Image 1: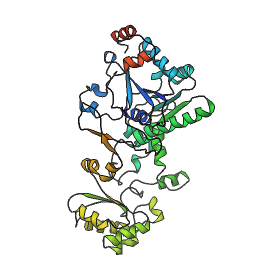
Image 2: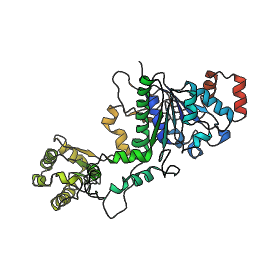
Image 3: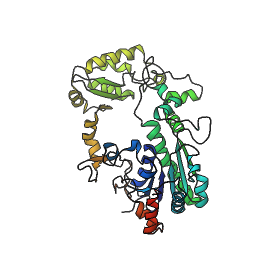
Image 4: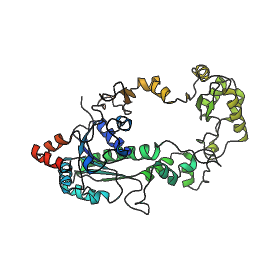
Length: 401
């Protein structure tokens, strides 16, 4: 069966997981992804110098559906190999700070000069220009600067730190994939590639604009203070409640009719007037809503989570148990949707991995191979470029590959 990106060659020049997830998604959809990694003789090839048999390496799912080429780009002969690959490639994804690729002869100007059809995607913290371009950063820092942390949690306490899903993955990884696919579509019309510039900070800020109160501030509305946003968990219809057995139930009944259904289902129709108001998007809960939330916190503690789920099953409401990892791994919906699949890797018998979240009816993605050991495909890739066995042996002896 054909796959959407059959015939697309992707080169990954990257040392951090968001870039790896970006190229993995392309690989899941059929692209031939070659991950360029530093040979052991030239420096650590894995994050934290993990061995191939350590959990850090064995749990790395973001390198599935890839080949691994060990290549020292600090050596001129390594750069020759890169340039030969770039001449054939469709896409390059790099995740270095600005100017690192220039020193390695792997920048957009150099590689697009070799191959004008090349789509070159840069994933960087702050972009290649501006006052922050040379700063280091992680997901937490980008969320802080973008104003995301400043909207999380209740006022007067430290903002909760979310998992590194926003700037790293929803931001850089997914925007990188989208930018690459857009550039490939444009190339089909113009015949030329282009530079796709994705900044972690930019994408975190763009995602923040999905919050209604924040959007309104852009057009002159009052700034939204932390804890007053409708998604902060302070309003009764959008909150998490503890149950009798120490578990938690999420309630997301923002629409008035869903809230009314919920109040009826839990036997408290008197709480219906605490439903969502338009002004709740950017204001703290009313006294009536605060009282309703306290009433529900006490009520939810009178039954177990399973009791509440059974009672609410037939009601048209937005609720869900707060799963721990074991619960998520066993969740019947995730299982049904193929989001937990066996990992075909003799190093970890019986292990599972995440499935493919994008389901295409005619050209679905496939998991074709486990993450490769560093340099596992070096010989095959070089032979395909025309290098003989003696040449490869000499490059290996010198630590170039």
